[in-house]
Image (cartoon, rainbow over all chains, first blue to last red):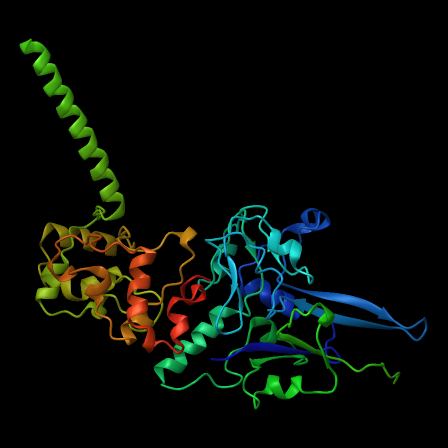
Length: 231
Length: 177
């Protein structure tokens, strides 16, 4: 069984936010607007964090795409009173919408703050409802949600592989963010397969994981040079 | 005394009828038979050896089985029984360039968050009747099988070995996402 993971090369990320847009389109994410965002109710499964490095004039922006880290030891999982979030055999941190009762304990216990709560029933006015993805549920008010690693695409690839009597090939599954990245900063694949592109990149000396000292064992691996060299 | 006895009988009848009525209502909600715009008989068509996928064209190709468009009906009924009053109704829909507003018989409610995949199940060799009952004998499509989660899981458990990983048979993310 595959163990899905992602490698993000921060030295390639330009902070263009194509991944954020692609995620919105793929996963039926609502646009909550300025007012709600100001209240800390942004509705994104992936966000770009911006950091400034150096002093003027030798200054650079550093971008970090942050999505659910699909932790192996996920802090969100043990705090759910109704087992709505759990780890599945593919190493995905699953969120079961119809079990969720909206206590938001998981979001409060997530060190990466990547979980999103539905404060409202979101509406897509005609003709915007025509672009909703039929492979993804529409979440309703009072429900927690988060990045699924585009599980619908993983399922589709598995169906295809089963029909053809083979295993899923490396690179066959691409979450929307990975697919849309113009600099190919993101790579998705099976971390249990040492030959997968993701595994190869993960072995880089530049590799690190976010808040690794917490022991959450994230499945998202970042690559970055220690020091930025001025061109 | 006699009047009193009668009153009791009446009361008993009313109580029984209320029970039966509410029971029927519940039953019709769960299993019932929705009323359709056209008295379509599955039985007549199945007896003519027309395959399910002739009309439900996507059952073995995609997540949704699909309903036939009114044009598909009329490819045959242009000639066959063209003067029957029910076929006249179908013709009227075609003339108005409208689809027949069939009433859904099966399907999961939105709050179940189920992503059911028809092709997956057809490809696994599961007979249509396993989930839809013996539609071939029905004059009006009815909810013969209750699609509860326990019922789905039971079959998944029995076929555990046919999943890519046996644990996926009862994994929430197999159906709910």
